[in-house]
Length: 338
Ligand code: SF4
Ligand code: SF4
Image (cartoon, rainbow, N blue to C red; front, side):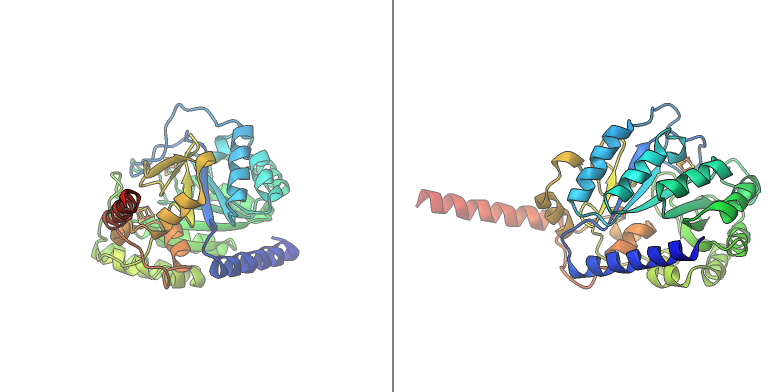
């Protein structure tokens, strides 16, 4: 990566971080899905199909414009496999045109030197690839052996930051593979992180003793900032709940291929409002709503966004919010009767 690109990215990160701390009333991170289709079928995944069409770029650009209106700092394109979208470069470029940080999550299969150079030109700033094992098996084909050549291309040509996420849990057979993946990532000059993954019904599976040991080793090898931001993983690995304030639906948004806002990939349907109708009233309600699924949540990026506000603005359960609303309406009714 060029030195100037690195410095510019770091400065932009610092400026967005201070903006996030100074004001609570804007979106920090949005995951945007332009493509639900995927070329793979990982055993633990509930986020893909094999038949849907790409969402037209013009429609995606309108969603990006709306996210810019909500003063979003970072948009990460995800899927399915977003590299299958024929107009991905145009989408990335539009995020940059609107002044936001552009990220991408991919399974890595489609990276060639030519494709990487096009993403450089479009202005991509971050890429994350999750690698699940060394050799493909029935659970996952996101494998180091298959992807190593692609990682070599990325190391040689990418101007953007590359993070390799290895995973533990969710039926991955050889937990020690996570260590091999993390070592290779560091060798190629990438950052490395480790995630505890969901079972395919989206629930948390506690780690086995061997998995826990490898998890700690991979964490030591990886990105120190990331380890500092992910204390929650230690509780989750022990199978213990973690107490935090999830700001999904407000500071973090998940926008599906139909353009609906959801809390996250694992809680689709809440609130399920079209993005173009999403208001700051919706934002405030979700910001203040306690999420029932928070104690066992493993979604790293939403936890990291939550850190900005964990120390302020306690949340209420949906039942408490509804009771308060009812009380307000009753008082209003009494005043009208008077
Ligand atoms: S985890 Fe990623 S690569 Fe695997 S099926 Fe799901 S979307 Fe596709
Ligand atoms: S706690 Fe986790 S699973 Fe629940 S809404 Fe927040 S990010 Fe999604």
